[in-house]
Image 1 (cartoon, one colour):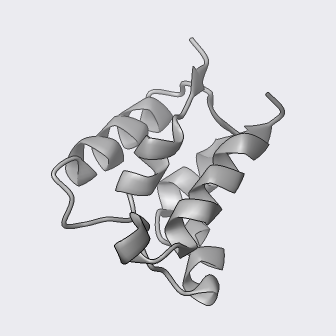
Image 2 (cartoon, helix red, strand yellow):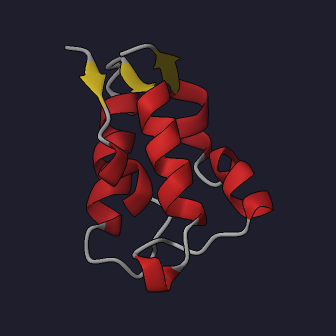
Length: 87
């Protein structure tokens, strides 16, 4: 089974205080460790960037550009095992 990860799952991985943070991290980790192909699209990346760098007052995460740019370094398992494709 091939899995396309929703942007919300990507975002929750970077919100440790969110109620769905642990589920997001655990579900992606389980898929990757089981050998399932896990993918994101250019659309996911654009949505992630827009939300991650938007102000919390505007329903974003408020991450600095430098931090958002380095988000792939936050989850090493995800970084190594996710591929980027086109929608």
